[in-house]
Amino acid sequence: MPGENLAIFLGYSGAMISLVLSCVFSFFFFSLSLKELHQGTGAAYGTAQAGIGLCRAASRNPNMIIKGIIPIAMAGVRGIYGLVLSIIILSGIHTEKNYFEYNGMMHLGAGLCCGIAQYSSGIAVGVVGESGTQATLRQSKLFAPIILVLIFTEALALYGLIVGMILSQQGQRLFVDVMV
Image (cartoon, rainbow, N blue to C red; front, side):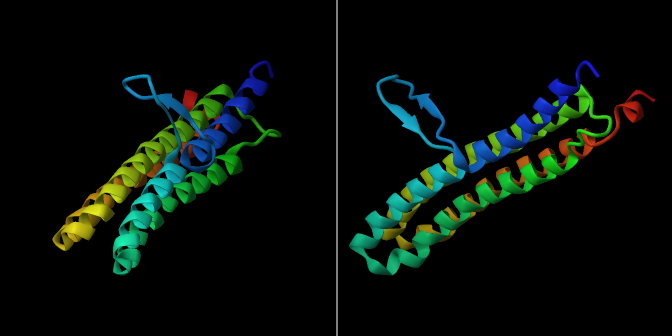
């Protein structure tokens, strides 16, 4: 089939993008001033930033260690979401059966949707985790509102995973079923 190789490439790209943007690869982007270069993705960035906040707060007050671990654990979940969707996408790529460009595009879209949601949610967890841990050190009443903000960022990541799963399931349909 003429588009079979492209379809398979798109499908595998979707699985790769979901996993890469969620946790593994270092994605470089410039800040607004274009003077500094930042790096990090989803779970990796969130874990690193929240870890920095934990170290700073725990060095002043060792009782902050348990409270500071919560954002780190929540950041790590983003990598798991990306891994789950990558496995779902990979299980839907059938090179021996009819796998058309439609299927590959749906799997690519699923990977992009989940990966970008995990990426942006991970950045939010990192920023809130670092700032929140240090703010809780100064004012313990801020702990509950910060956890609430972290839960909302978790919801954004979960939305990306759900939409990615829906798209990947649509990508597993046969192209003939779509045309009817």
